[in-house]
Image 1 (cartoon, rainbow, N blue to C red):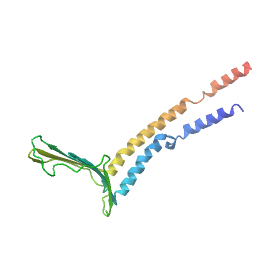
Image 2: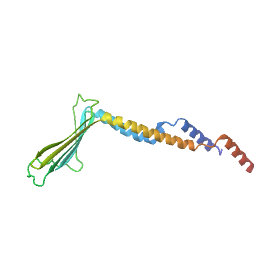
Image 3: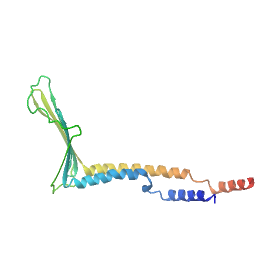
Image 4: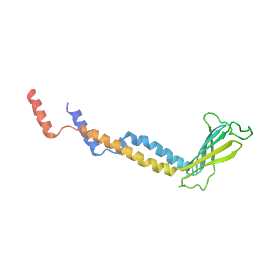
Length: 187
């Protein structure tokens, strides 16, 4: 009976070596969560718009998920020291965490939008300069960029695990027979 655990371990090693699937790799399960989140956000953005904004008097940041894309925009104002004070120079200040808004009612959302990016230096008047930058990143592109990275890392982790299992294999049969005979003579 003393050999039972050893045989069980050998059978398990052989089984793991033969068919080590990706489900045995922790990175597979950890990496599956962003895939599910991206797919859920992509489907949700066909019907709803979710927006997060954070602003202070000299800058405004907006991240919006709608129309199957993530829309990022930055706006900021630079005011010269000698510029006159006037209404409407800055932005309203939000709380520390920003503000969330969600609305629905989109019917004809594009499922596979294209990349768009623009940045411009806006109005220049009396020492006041307004800047704007916009980035539109499609969710399908995020998913297409993430999947090969996740698959490659998962595959390399599975390969490393398989090599570790192969390194733990018992010695060859010839060596084992000689080892057992030597042990039998010592009893």
